[in-house]
Length: 282
Image (tube, rainbow, N blue to C red; front, side):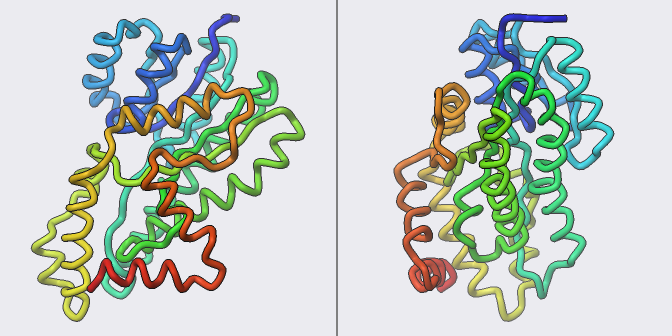
C-alpha cells in the first residue's frame, strides 16, 4: 500500500507528551501510528484526537518497547498498512526514584530497558524504512539526560545513555539521509510522575540516613512540577523538530530547560552542577 501522507510512529501515547504529540501530528496531516503497551488505555488519546477533528488519522497499535518481537512486528505492520515510515518519535519512558544503596541492580536494569534499550530497539527496527523515506528519528529524553539529578540515578543514567547513543548515531545516520534529534523537556504536568507509583511515606520511613535528603528532594520536586509546562506545550517542540527542514540535534522545550541544560554544557569541571543539585538535598 502507498500513501502520500507522511507516517510517524510514536511510542508511549497513552498520556502526556506522547498523547499530545500524536494529536498534534494528526492535526497537522500526518498519519500517526500511536503505540502503547496497553491499548486499553487509548481512551484519552482517542477522545483528544476526536476533539481535534483528527481521529481518522490516529491508528492505535500495541507496542512494548522492552519486547524486541513486539517492536519488530509493530514497525513492519505500520509500513505494511501505510506504505511508508517517515519518522519515529521515541517517547515511551518510565521513572525510577531512589538511591543505589537502597535500590537493586534489577531496578536499574528495568529503567535501562524502558528508557534506553527500548529506544535502541525501536530505532534499529525503523532505520531501514527511514533510509528509504529520508526520514528522521526524534527521541524525547529529558533535562535529566544532560544533568544528573539526586535520587534519579537509574533514570538519568538511562537518559544519558539515550543521548549518547543518539549523539553518536546522528552523523552516521546523516550519511544515509536520516535526521536524528533529541528533545529535552523539564518538568511537564502529566501522568509521568504518578506512573512512577511511589509510596512516599514508606520510602521516607525506609530511607534511614538518606531520609533528610530525600525529603528535601521531594519537597523541591513537588514545587517544580507545580509550575510545570503542559504536555501540549512540550509537544510543540517535538513537532518543530519533526517538521523543520533542518532541525538541530538538541532542543529544549522551555526557557527553563534551556537555562538548566546550559549550566551543564558550560560546566567543564562539574562544580556548577554539583553546587546546584546539592541545594536540592539540603
